[in-house]
Length: 101
Image (tube, rainbow, N blue to C red; front, side):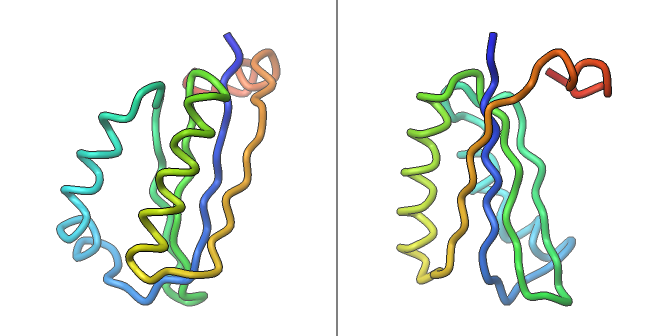
């Protein structure tokens, strides 16, 4: 199986940390139900005013569908300057370095 990774990064003004976790619980539950999602790591950088996430999907088609959906959702929240980078995962090397695939 070949996994696909998406890295989202965008300007964000908060909330941060525990407050973000409380505010985003519904969104996290929605994301957890996405077809093909293996896992997501939520990212935040208060000093730079940026947030996002790193996602792994079971297929490129699932990753592309989610990228499009989430980009539209973020834009609907008024977020601009969205970076969404997609990568194929090198399974052999990732397993050697203990990636949870």
